[in-house]
Image 1 (cartoon, rainbow, N blue to C red):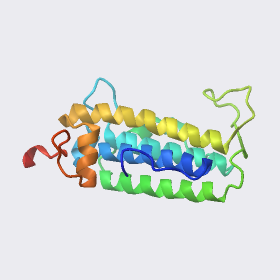
Image 2 (spheres, helix red, strand yellow):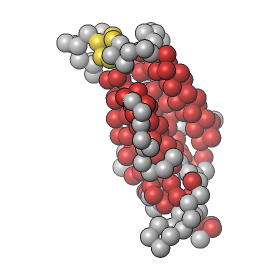
Image 3 (tube, rainbow, N blue to C red):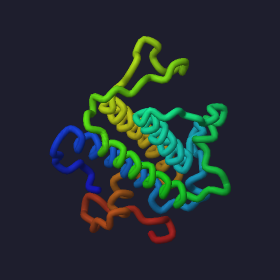
Length: 192
């Protein structure tokens, strides 16, 4: 995907297009990483690229389950596990699962006739407002854009801490852009 969202046809297309762009930006931060590098936590925090991909996948599925008004049966005691890329997981598997979650979101949203449709707020969740009964599908999509963008920013910092790579050179490499005087596609250290 180019660095900007193409023109949109309507609100639904705009929301989904911006969500796609944020997903793509997060995927770009993983470009060229080995599984070992994707597990690295090189900053003062505990975040890794693989763990961030895993978390946003889980978050997107959780929010879409709410849109479908399905009960969340996950064990919340494993919340921090959702930020961890285990040794038995590969970056390719996590990225494939993220793509699957994205396609699931697209299908669910395509079937929603009104983006103002109520999405009930689950009661008793401490980080959800007690004085709000429902969000809308529109609100959920905006929240997913915000959540993905926030964690994409985390991933940018983690990636730069791993090997110095930054977003635009990574995007140029991932998309096969030609080198220009002002932008050189990223190359692995062994290829420089």
